[in-house]
Length: 307
Image (cartoon, rainbow, N blue to C red; front, side, top):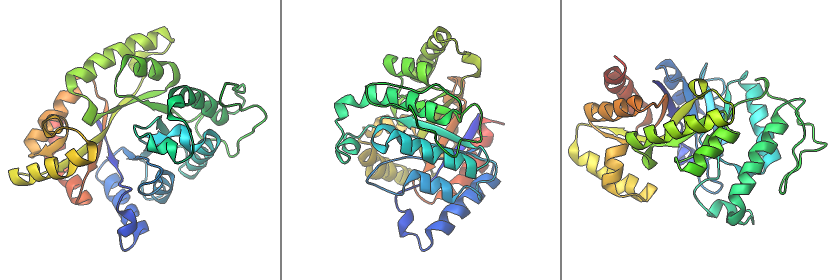
């Protein structure tokens, strides 16, 4: 199993030196063996994800950098494609475009977009963005987007294009969308269990065959894996009930069984179950004391999962 680190966006602006905070974090993460660096997206809240990934581009070394996930339709397809292509150039071809509709209708309201159209807009948006990002591709013409006559520059370093991974919680419709449009699947840790992931992965593999894609080479990742490792039971309960339940709007017991909150042994047991279910990579997200928590994870949890 591979591991990635989720770089925070909220609270970064409050750091004495936001740039140093992000670059130091990225260097530590790369030094400790993280293979991926990811960050999420909200139009109103927190740092812009493309700005965060640009800030860590050099310090992240060899890590692949991904959005997980960028809220695609409200951002504008051409603008998003331009940002991904530019970041791919700056990183020497290390970018993954992790995209989704987002789960907050507010992201659509603030740009005057009707959220009732978000799914057809998203599907067309992915196809249009791929056309923008693939030199020599046929233009895409749809109900919402038309790439005819647009020659995006710069083009990505990766050929034929940079990979587009689709976010889905695992519904039948979502998995069909991943298979039809995506180069990879981004699942959500707080919205699934190992047995549910395994069942969804089996469905996805069947769908991939229908669309002529090789299930064995199709990547997946488990994102939004929030983490706080501690031997203190009281601290565990404070994090679950006082922080994560309010943030994610999920029952405490549901989060307790899904996320990496608790002792190293408990966290390792959860990760091992996800690994056995077919998860290939996990994007962990320390909710506080980020570098300290990452060190604990690498030293005390990872060896129990991958001895």
